[in-house]
Every structure is written in structure tokens, then in C-alpha cells.
Length: 393
Image 1: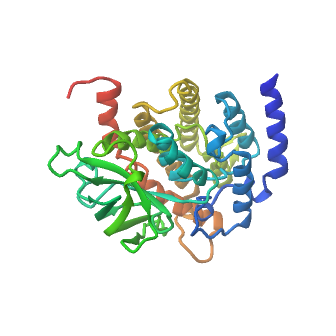
Image 2: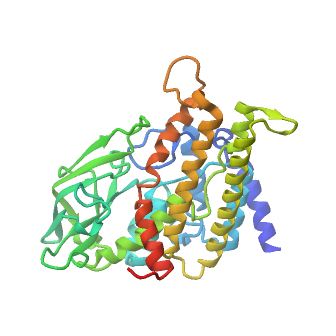
Image 3: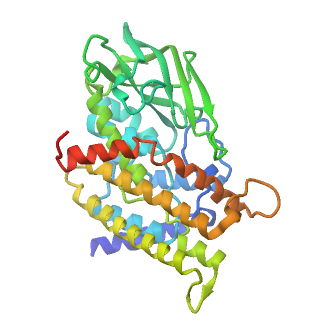
């Protein structure tokens, strides 16, 4: 009875507060990332973010003292269902909510939580990730960015790459080497510091999709307060591994959230047509049905995992399975859309193409990074083999 009352209240609140433009598919340039540098192309994106933040719905399962709504697992499921019912976009996305926020809840001190979590939940601070380096990709632990103690601060020098959103970020969570004599996994520290300081330089990297979400980031005597070390000095690898599990769960869709997107079947019907009540192309029809069945099975698995993980509040190595399968499903989805749309999904600019078609072209190109970011598919297969299946090296 209480859950049904919550559903009624939530449905009423969403109907009253979710703008009509927010009930449409979300273009890449309208992602609600928050932060002090963001410019909102659609003003209602900010309105929606602020309304949800005031209600705690940007971080619904976080404690209320940190800006969340303190919802139970069942209530959070209802909220997701009701947002999906009206096809509402997420009110806030980004590494603050999906990565550093959960890591702080698990590893942060009370002081660190109080300082950083509320500004994540209300969208006032944008975070980026300082993990990968030019010579430390899949072998992340070989990173060379250095941090040396200077009083109450660290002085940081080095370079990071593929720092998504660094050109708009206010803060970075970063892996730095604090003990060069220790084995590579043992001399790493996880630290937070501001991006708006003289020692930080950011250079965006333009992708084939036309967007520049990735950046090169350079540190030259950048400063970080020692109070912003998360976990223990020289044991940052422990926090880093857990955060990667949160990241992979998010990338693969294993958190159970997300807006309903235009289905492959809808696109295929529009561009291929219907014959006797069925998609006119039998080969594509079989592929679309197979993909839809896989999506449904994956969705049920995700929901089961969300329910089962409520006791631990943290992801496990199964996050690698979500990352592997979810990203491959997304890539396949766009390949099927390309098959259905043909040359109409290969336009870049000019006459003959609708705005939605040009958007899908860029989205298709963007998916090529899905199986690389957050750990390649090959890395995930290794983790699944060793940590989930227990296979020998």
C-alpha cells in the first residue's frame, strides 16, 4: 500500500514538473552534466535538473544529508518505471553521480562526503577522471604521473589522456604515483583536486563523430590538498578498482537506469516499411527480433542484479559482464539502424538529411568507442574468465 502511494505521488510530481521537451530523445549536445562552465542549449534541461535535485531525484538512493532522496530499492525501481513511462530524460548524468559519488560513499571520510556529495547531487560541480596516460592504457597501474608532498599539499606533474569532459570539469579524481620504489600497484594514491588552477592545461581531442568529449590533460606543478586523498596513501589502487566497477556498470547499463531510446524496430518500420503486418525485409526482421530478445533478456538480468546488490550497495566483478555485453549490444543496435536507414544514416551535413538522421550518424560513429572506454572488451573477457569463472591463468 505504501509503495502504491509512493507511485501515485511520484507519477503526479513527474507529470507536473517534467517539461515536454524533456520527454523526447536526448541529443548529445543536451546532456545534463551540470557544473560551473556548462551552457545549456535547452533551458528546460537546467529547469528539470534543478527540480529533480530539490526533490533528491538526481541521486535517489543516496542519503538525504548528501542531497539524495534516501529511497529504498523498491521505491527507486518505481521512480525509474515512472520516468520511463513518460520517456523522461535523466535529470543529471556524469562521473560525479556514477563514479566518484559512489566511491566517496564507500571510501570517503565524513568530511569528504559532506564537502563533495551535495555538489554532485545538485549538479553544481562537474567531475572528470584522471586515469589513462599515453603509455599506460590497459596496463593502468604502470602510470607515471607523480605527486610529491609539499606541506599540506601534493605537487603533481604528469599527463593524462582520454579525460572525458575535462574541458568543462571543475574537479578531477586522479591516480598519481606517490612511491616510485614500491611495486607498481602499491605506490599509487587516489586524490581529488580542482581543474581551475594554473598548473592544469586541457586540450580537447576531436572524434570522428565531430564531438570532443575526450581530452589530453597536463599537470605542471598542479596542487592537491592532502585532505582530499581518498582511502589510504599508496593504496589508491583499491579505490581505483572499485570505481572501475562502478564505471563499467554505468557504461554497460547495469545500473538499471536510462531513458528509453528509439527502438531498432521503429526505425526499420519507418525506412523499410511494413508488408502484411510485418517488416518487409525478412533478413533484417530476424536480426531485429533477435536483438530485441537479447535486449529484453539483458534488461531482466540488470533488474535482477539491481535487486540482489541492494544488500552490498556496491558492484562486483559482474560489472565486467554488463560492460562487455551492454556495449556490444549498443554497437549492434546502431549497425542494425544503419542497415535499415541505408545512406540516410551516412550523411554529415547539407540537404537531403533530416536533423534526426544526422544525429544518428554521429551516434553510430560514437559507439565505436564503447568497447574501448572503461576497459576494452578484451580486458573484460579476462576479468570474467579469472574473477567470475575462476579459470586458471
